[in-house]
Every structure is written in C-alpha cells, then in structure tokens.
Image (tube, rainbow over all chains, first blue to last red; front, side):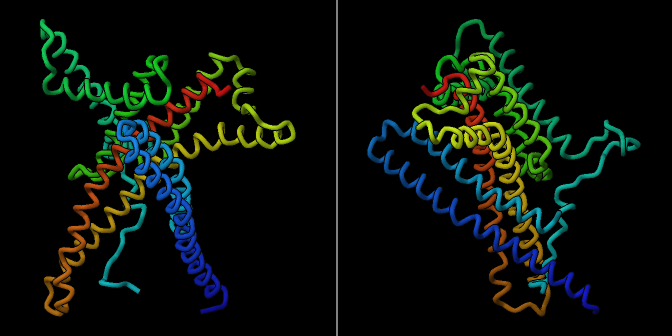
Length: 83
Length: 270
C-alpha cells in the first residue's frame, strides 16, 4: 500500500472517530440540560398539581430547545459518516 | 471488524426509494414511497374531517360524538386548549385550521415509521421539514408585519425591552440571527433529525434481531449467544413504543413552536 492510500485510510478512520466523539460530546450538554428542565418541571408539578398542564407544555418547549443542540450533533455525525 | 457477521445496510438503502410508476423515472411526476406517505398524510386528515362532518350533519339532535367524530373533535380540542390557548391566547384561534392541519400532516407522515410493512417516517427526508419550516417562517413574519408594520415588527424583534444602550448593538444582532435564521433552521433540523435517528435506531435493532436469530440456528454458535437471542427483539418492541411517542411528540412540538412564534409576532414583549 503506498503512502497516499495509507493516509487516505487514516483520514477515513479519523473522520469516523471525529464523528463518534463529536456526537458524544454534543450529547453531554443537552443531556444535563434536559435533566434540569424535566427535574424542575416535576418539582413544580409536585408543588402545585393544578398547574401541571401548563408546566407540561412549557416543559416540552424547553426540552425541544435543549434537544436541538444534540440533534445538530447527530446531523453532523450523519454528514461526516455518510455524505 | 465485523462482530456477529452483522452487516449494517448502506444508508442510501434506508432512505432512498426508487420511483414506482413505470416510465416516469426522471419526470417530475415520478412517485416513490416517501411521496406516497405524504399523499397518505395529506388525505388521512381530509377523510377524517369529511366523515366527521357528514356524521355531524346527519344527527338532528346533538348527541355524544361517536367513532370518527371523536377523533376529529379530540384533535381540534387538543390544538385549541393545549396549543393555542397556552401560547397565543384567545385571539390566536383564527390560526386553528393552520395549526391543526400542520399537526395532523406531521403526525400522519411520522407515524408510518411504526406501521408494519411501511416502516418509514417520511420526515426522515429533509425536503418536507425544510418546506414546513419555510412556511412557518413566512407565516409568523407575515403575521408580525401585518400587525405592526414592517419597521415596527423589525423593531419588536431586534430591540428587546430593558436592554442597556451599550449592549444594544450586540443584543440586536443576536436577536436578529436567532429569530430569522436559527428558528427555521432548528425547526427543520429538529423534526428531521428526530425521525431519522428513530428510523436508524429501529433499523439497527431489526438488523441485529435478524442476524442473531439466524446465528442461533447454526450449530457452531456458542450457547450464551443463543440465550441472548430474544434480547434485541424485545428491545425492538420497546423502541417501537418509544417511537410512537416520538412521532406524536414531534408533531406536537413543531405545532406548539409554530404557535409560540406566531404568538411572539402577534404580542411583542413590552
């Protein structure tokens, strides 16, 4: 195998490694964030059960905003691996 | 390295579908599985509401809703109480048809992910999420411009109340980018990536169950592998339930974000 082909394989490997690591890193923050959102929503619902409906809607909104970051990480993963 | 002789299909095989109408391969009338799912997602709500309307007109006295009428009334009530009242307020009720059709369209094109023999969420292709996000972008900006005028709306967006004068240029730039660029982008990516991730997850466990099952039938397979054979399949069943939840939740989130954006354009913070 000549040097160029070797470098190419190494590059492919690095790409896959970067994609995997990238997604993993992108999931840390949103994971913590969604935990905070849901945890606080549950606290609110437990304190004031009559507001559960409103809290739930707002909770899903918060989850959606937080989750977007992890999903962008996932899209980058797909792009690096398959595009 | 290929553990368990597992071959994951090429991603093109999971997402790209050939044209099914003979002789129309390159024309604009070509139709593939994704297109058929969208046609279904377009027709299903129409059929539900036309049938519900027929039922409603036939009953002379007001009776408790039954059958398909329940579905229609529940979905209208859900959009009305849980989405519009919570995020826009009573004057947002004029957007009910728009939000309701958007919710049902996204829901029906997502739910095919778990329908046997179809097993494909049409929104795992980027085209429709982008189109819907552009539509939402046009609608909420249109609502803002209609109610406050072009410059009034722009001022409402880029100048949040109570910001110190020194910080204003920075805040204005951030608000501008986040409202006009990040909003549609994240709306489209959220729907697309959720459905694609769910689809890949189901495919992974389906391929794993299939491979492990055939391995368990050969003689040379170690016993521990035969014992864990049902595990991927049980996981697949669990994930199918989870994906039903995701399909409903993504339709809900897309719709409520649309409502929140319209509400923000309608009633700016003071």
